[in-house]
Amino acid sequence: MNMKALRFETYGPPSVLSIQDLPRPALEVGEALVQIKTSSINPSDVGTVAGRFHSKLPMTPGRDYAGVVVEGGEWRGKHVWGTGAGFGVVRPGAHAEFVVVPSSWLSEKPEGLSMEQAAVVGVPYLAAWLSLVEAGGLKKGERLLITGGSGAVGSAATQIAHWRGAIVLAADVEEAAQDADVFLNLKETDLVSGVQQATGGKGVDIVLDTVGANLFSSCLRSLRVGGRQIAIANAAGANAEVQLNLTDFYHNELHLIGVDTQKLTGPEIAAVMNHLREGFQGGYLRVSQPETNRFDQAVEAYMKVAERKTRTKQVLVLG
Image (tube, rainbow, N blue to C red; front, side, top):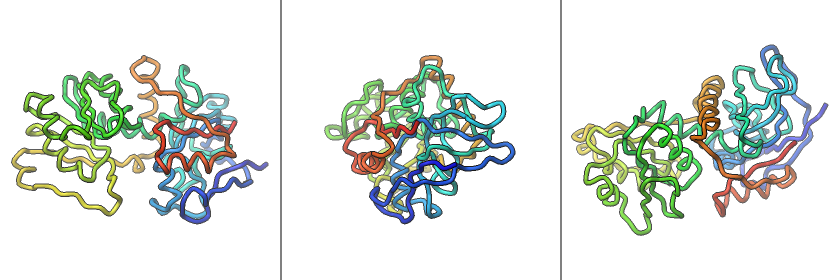
């Protein structure tokens, strides 16, 4: 039997993508066949197609999905969601009608989320959870600064931080992050002075920097003594360098932590998705309705993400 899958055979812009007919993948022992119902398009998927992660060619991109297990023992018939380890890089991704994964990678979808909503949770919430909870050790009552606070990761991080009882300062150059306790408009306010004013001159306990680039050093200067900064991106590009005042860094006893969700294994991702399911079912987390696109509109949907003309998440509907 065949299936339809989005493929790229050379690196480049979204126009290199095409929908192809491929054999439906066969199962091995311990694996499950998931019928993909919906799959979101992340900026990292655009980067995958562009060659940022040196994927094997040809390749099917797509990291996040929601679907139904159609073969796979006790998982058969269950609605699942998540992200696949190495999807779109070392193994075919979720922008296809079917995907095979080890059963240990699966996580049940929260009942309260539609397939469209569930498909946009993966990468942004995974990055936020891994950064704040597992790497950053965010504690109740701590003050957290999020750069890019109005973006997908920033919004997810704000919700997770409030769930854990933290106080959130969000900074961005675009619209206000509605859920934050304090919003700093970086078109009008210097980041460091804004943080100092909002914290009574104390600085924040932790920074989640989703921007990097020229905000990197400002984030460090926004920390209290002994504070910790988490870096997950660099808007200036993969090879761009940032500046660090080493003397200030060690005198202020700061901690710098790097986080890369692509290093997670499938079972580790499933464990995080299970934690997130508790948050959604408990009402602590929520997700906005994404914009849906038919599968034959995939290239156009990729272009929307690549051109960053909208912050609304884009979802491909496959089944």
